[in-house]
Amino acid sequence: GTPEAATYEELKAQKTALQAIVDLFKEKPKKAVKQAIASGLCGETTEEIAHWLRDTPGLVKTAIGEYLGGHTDEEIEVMHKFQDGMNYHNIVFDEAIRLFLSSFRLPGEAQKIDRLMEKFAARYCDCNPEGPLSFPSADTAYVLAFATIMLNTDAHSSQIKNKMSKESFVKMNKGDGDTPGASEEMCSGIYDRITTNEIKTKDDDKLEAALANQAGRAKEQSTNFLNVLNIKNLFTGSDSSAETLEASRMLSMRI
Image 1: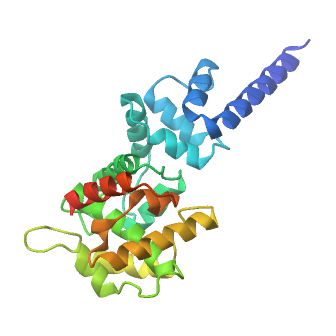
Image 2: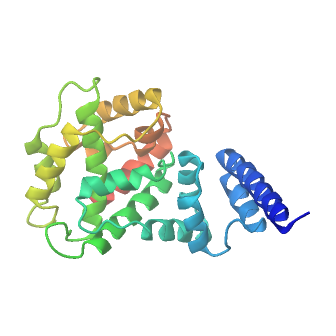
């Protein structure tokens, strides 16, 4: 056969191999990444794996989130490299959250979400070290990120009747004399944009309904409903009291 025919056959075989790996990735993302490396379709470094996760068409976003939420040193480093590839410079905070959540779906486990959100907050602060989009600390950005997602649910769920007011949202997040928070102007802008333009965090209507239901219950149980934020229920619609307590404890420590 001709060199052209050989190249065509090689490309066809490579495409078939990649499709098999993409299919495997839906159920077993770690195994799929190992196969991609073994097949020469993905490099071995954490940076190359991060690029592969971000740039390979057809990868299921839920599975990307599961991989990025992994707890091994390598998986955490891949997650950091993945997020370091995001540029949030001069992008308002809630738009950065939209961008962040468009590249994968948050996993259901509280500790995984915590690591991802913590890195998002740090990356946003690195991209905006000064000026009106800067934060007093990455912890402030971390808490506001959760508050923004909760506001999104509060504002757009038909199951939540008593909507959070702008005054309450600003007051909750701007901090006080002892604890610096986000600026009033930033909080006000986030409130206006989120209440008029919903962040879509899920593709599944049933999960959206469960998410909204949980946010409503959390809000009714506490005046500062971030203190009882059920991270697992918020994103997966499932229930686990031990993880609920752990999620709430981790966030409460930040507030």
